[in-house]
Length: 290
Image (cartoon, rainbow, N blue to C red; front, side, top):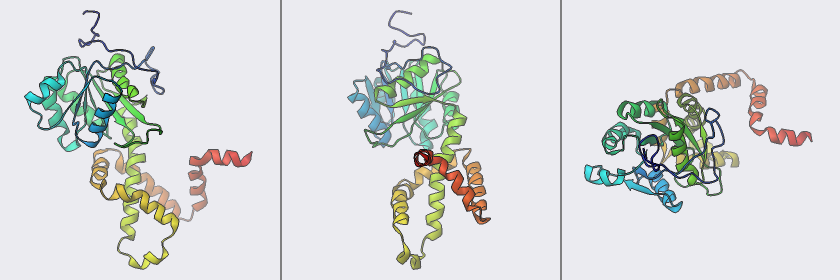
C-alpha cells in the first residue's frame, strides 16, 4: 500500500474542516471526519441528490453525479476512483439500484444511503455489497434554511470501521452539517416517533374533520396555523410520508403508544398530559421561576 492509499485500498482522503462530529462517537479514538477523495451521488437529479451534489461542488469536493439511465456507460466514469458512493433513490427501486451500481465501485469503497429508515436499507446494502456500508440520514429537506442546524445521523454497518465512518462523516461536515452517530434500531425508533407520528396524527386529525363544512365558520387562528403547517406534508409529500411510515418496523408500536395518551384524554386526565407535554418547554418554566 503506497502513501496515498488507505487501508481499504482506495486513495487516502484529506482531513475534513473544523466541523467535527459531536455526538455518539465515543467508541472511536481520535475521531476526525475527512473529505472523500471522490464521491459519486447516485440519483443526482432527485431533490435530495441534486441538493447534495450542488453543495458538494460548492464546498470544493471532488464529486460526480449520475442518474437514469444507469448503464455501464454512465456508471463506469461516474464511479471511477470514488471512495464513497451515496445512493439517493426512492425505496421502491433501492435494491435494484444498489445491485446495478456496486459492480462499478472500487472494492474498498464505502456504500452509503440517505433513506429515512435504516434497518432495512442497511440489510439490503450489506446483502449486495461485500465492502463497508454506512447509513446516513440528513434530518432536513432539499431546501434547508442555511442558518439552521443541519444534523445528519450516521449509522455504521456491520463491517464499517472508524475510517469508513470518518469518510462518510467528512462528506457531510464539508457541507456544513453536524453529524452524530447512532444505531439503526435507535434511529428507526426515533423516526417512528418524530417523523412518522407527526405525519400519522396530522393525517388522522384532518381526515376526521374532512367534509364537515359546518365547521368552517368556527376555524380559529391556532387551527389555521396547524392546517398551514400540515399542508405540504399531507398533499404533495403524502405518498412519501406514507411509504416511510409503512417501511419503518416501529411505526405501529408508536401508534399504540400514542393511543395510550388518547386513552388518558378520554379518561379525563388532561392535567397529567399537560404536565408531561411541558417537558418540551422546560426552559420557559425555568425562566418563569427566576
